[in-house]
Image (cartoon, rainbow, N blue to C red; front, side):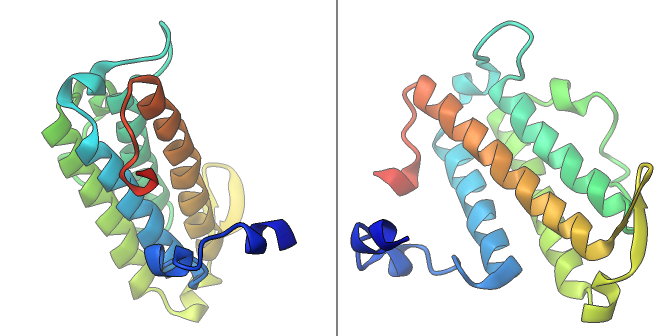
Length: 166
């Protein structure tokens, strides 16, 4: 921890004002990074995959989209009627992927903002697992950050520099 404090630029907090601001701040941060990375990725890189049988760039983004909507469905927010099975592999254009990504990120943000402290403690199920609404939101943010890391690796492998690291 001391090393981190001594080797972090004083402007770090100014560059990432949402960090250390609880769930909403962290959600805003990962959402902004996902969108920024998608926007700087050239359209032809959306179909790139690191190896046969591994998700392409667009498939990773659409996996995030589907998971966001699926986890919201577990707390009573219905999956959009225009989101169909198979879209994780059929939606590949940069514009369409970004449109779905933004829509799912905003849906999570709005859903979380609508929950009261008591609502967050409400019991629910995710498939066969007993959990709470709060734990669903925690899983959503962890999942989005997990795949952000994957997408940063994809970007680096294809010569794309994440905008926040320039």
